[in-house]
Length: 204
Image 1 (cartoon, rainbow, N blue to C red):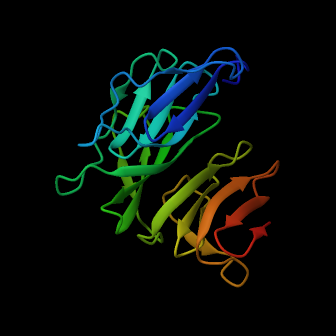
Image 2 (image 1 turned 90 degrees about the vertical axis):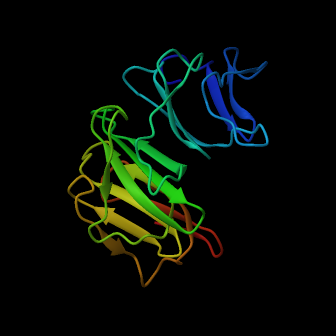
Image 3 (image 1 turned 180 degrees about the horizontal axis):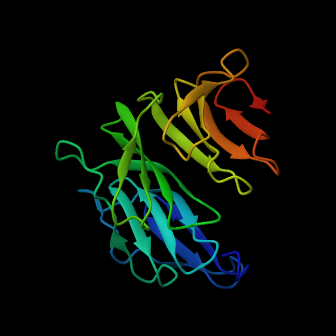
């Protein structure tokens, strides 16, 4: 939690856990997050609102969930269904200047992925597809200085970049990057980008 550094959140295959004492102790904080048929709540990613830090988003095996009370309760924010399937959301990112703007990478049956954008805190979503492949999205990064600059790493197609808030995309770094990229991050300047390859190395 940026406002309370001793408050930490961990996403696990058994739900969300929270510590309020700098990781000395943990309690489960998953009330409202759906579980699968085996009783598990796989939490792939967490994103904290930098302005209202008790607001947290969780990308899970069964969609996006939102807490507005520091993880005590959660509500589903997944109107991003396709042909009746629940999306597995492994990537989430907030606009650091306007945290009601949210990006989510939603995978379907492990076969394809679609990037979605919400401009109302997850209440509604719109797909972003122009120039973007359907490769599985592993992470999303938004520039703090220029939030219209957005990057998405994929498993199979490298990294894509957008300069207009996700409306259009282009693939970048084909001659340098490997195709399977685990994570992407933006540095102090919007054009300083880091990528973690899944097989060969780390890139800037």
